[in-house]
Image (cartoon, rainbow, N blue to C red):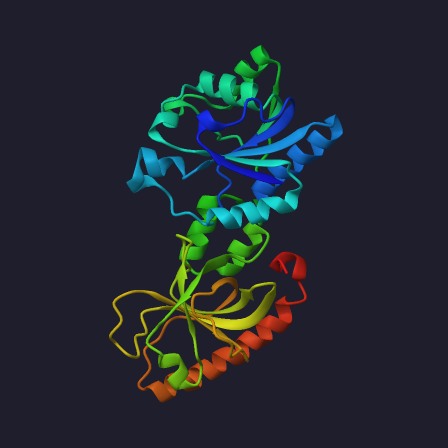
Length: 320
């Protein structure tokens, strides 16, 4: 798959002479998005033409109405990595700017879908909107498509355990600490990514040296302790993550993400790691002393080891 991040005026003319295209923000790359990608790729292969996922960066609301913009589930490079697994020929990400926001829906279709992509078929979700002021909807896209000779198919939403799979619901689950339910909608554990930065060094004094993560994701699960897998390079290790304010020490002003990798002692500062959330172990607590906290961490680690045994056999879902 070739990834292109460009202003709409910079998109090659043409990028493809004939293509099947899916359109959306694809935040989270959840099970609903997978349906769009699979249909797009399968149909393009049937027709012997190019498959393209077209998205926007940053999220349009970050430009149009920043206070209303949803927190992003995935950094862009993680989204690219996930899309590579679907067999798409291109992931085209159009830079969303005030200039692009002013582009009329008809011009978007004529200049980009038809002029640049040579579109023959389009796959979208039922709520897809586009063009200046969100003037274009699925009905309009079908009407314009009939004029330009391409078809539009609305892919039915995916339902899991009676709930619609959506990025909005996944955000709510994570913010509520329900990482297991979020996993079911994503089709894989939620992953925080970021660089390891220096902390206060308290974990080492307690016998559990932690890596302090500076997350790139905008959605951080609810404060508490979780069993996790820690992705470092091409390997994943069992671990425990604590999210919160270290109430036992009573002097933290900022929420921290502290990762303990079980039986691991290598240097991690400035390394980029990923944290895969398996289970929530407990809420954040204030303990009467560092010793009592250390005893609880020992119990947390034992629980995390059990979780690792339970989940590490599910390699496909964990992504390793």
